[in-house]
Figure 1 (spheres, rainbow, N blue to C red):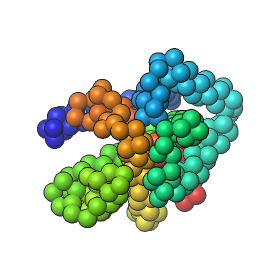
Figure 2: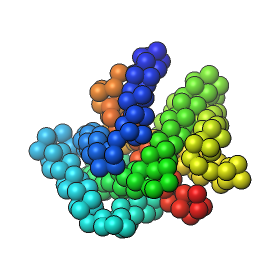
Figure 3: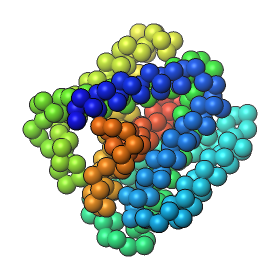
Figure 4: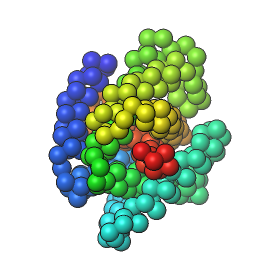
Length: 274
C-alpha cells in the first residue's frame, strides 16, 4: 500500500504543479472547482446521504455558490475575500468540534444538515482562497503552489515519521494511526518548504521568520482538516471517502488538509504583510 501511495503521488504531483503554475487563473479556478465539487460529492456520503438526487442537489448548490462568488467578485475580489475570511473563522469552530468528538455522532437530520453546512464552509472558502491567492500580481501562482506544497510536505513528513517512530497517539478517538511524532515530523517538513520557498516567492531572508510562522500555522490547520474528515468517517463508519486515487482513497482524502490550510494561509499572509 505504501508503494502504491508513493507511485500515485509521484504521478499526480507534476500535473498539479503544472496546472497551478501554467494555467490562467480562470482556468485554474474551473479545474479547482471540479475537484472540490468531487470532494463534496464524497462528503455527502460521509454525512449519511446515499441517494444520488439529494447528493447531486447539494453539489449543484455549492457549484452555484462558487459561480455567484466569481460573478460578484468585482475588480477588488471582495466576494473571494469575504468567503476566505469566513472559511478561516469556520476552522476555528471546527477545532471545538474535534475536541467534542461525540457531537453530531448520532444519525439525526439536524446533525446531517450541520455536517453538510460544514462541508460548504470548508470547500467554498478554500476554493475562493486559492483563486484569490493565484491572481495576486506578485508571484501569485508561486504563492498558490507554495500553499499547496506546504500541505503536501506536512502530510508526507507526518506519514513517514509517524509510520517509523509514531508511539504517542495524537487523537486516538478520531484517527488512531496519527501520532504526535508524525505531527512534529509534518511541521518539520513544512518548515523545510518555507526555507526553500523564500527566494522563489520574491521575499528576502529577513522575511523567513514570518514565512515559517505562517507555514507552521497553516500546516497545523491542515492537520485539523485531516482530523475533521476522519471524524466524519468515524461517525459514518467509512474507512475512506472513496476509491478514485489508488493508495490514497477518495478525492476528499487528498483535499481535506488543503481545505483547512488555504483560508488560514491567505488570511495569515495578509496579516503578516508577506
